[in-house]
Image (cartoon, rainbow, N blue to C red):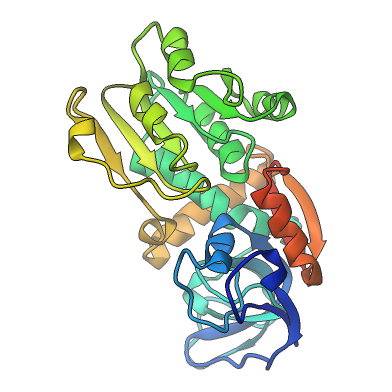
Length: 321
């Protein structure tokens, strides 16, 4: 079968379109014929070596498609089921072997590609808004990268919870996209000081929570934007990892800092089903809008990575085998 493989780390050009052996299912595993694979920043981190990948590697951790084979002991899915997943590797391929407990069924009537677009980013937004810091209608949240894949979904979920949303974007075009998603206030981070603008909007009170997927470039302004006893939820590092900082930065306002991951918030089948059912159910009914920025042929994975890293995108990128 065809797949994208890394034999060295580096720029997008190291993503090679090659022939690899087909996967076979072991016990409690299923083979999925992929309809789409999601492209995420964690894939970029693997490609550049930031996550210390073991090479050779087929990148990717999210996708959707049709179950074509199951191993012994599989009870969660059957051959022919339309499924989606996240948390299983080697997804930049025509077929993938997935632990069956990680697979969820795509609702009838939903495009199977949308399942790939909604799983990782949708469940990330879900745990951020409803578990890591459960938003209330009295809260104001600052959401960085509001026109990105997670950002657009997180804005919508924050509004479901009744919170007021301030978001940051890099361009006026992205500002319009974030506003359409429901953001109440938008800060152009390329032209304005984030913390100063947050304090103007909140009458110098600050926000109860900052959801930060940017990392190094926004950490200090995120801290400065918080109200006393506020929460900084640092869930990504698109600009690079935050350098070591003394805990004393939290002292003046008794702040909370956490660095969550989706794996910890979908650690059981029960939690995975609950989060995915909410997300996919909301998408099916139209309560949650998933924006797919672009679909790329599998062989064009390097182009997708260039677009993602160049911040030329808004919403989800998919690879289509």
